[in-house]
Length: 95
Image (cartoon, rainbow, N blue to C red; front, top):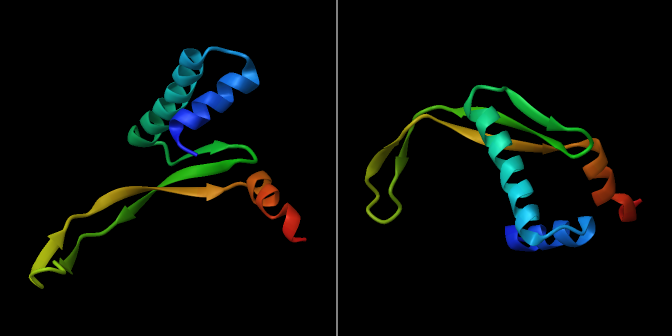
C-alpha cells in the first residue's frame, strides 16, 4: 500500500474528502518527523508501534564496482518497532 492508497482508504472510512485525508496523513508524518529531528528519543502510538533513532558510527566501506575504499560517515537512522496490538493482528491466523 502506498501513500495514495492509504489516503483513499482513510477518506472512504471516515467519509471525508481525499484532500482532507491527505492533509491528515501529511500532518501526522510531519509531526513524527519533527519530533525525531528535534531530539525526541521515541514516538509511540499505543498498540501500533514506536519510532526511535539509532546512531550508526562511521566506518570504512568498499565501492563494489571499483573495489576502492570509501568512508561512510556516521549517521542517525529511524527504527520502527511494532507494538503488541500490531504484532497480535499480524499473527492472529497463525495460532
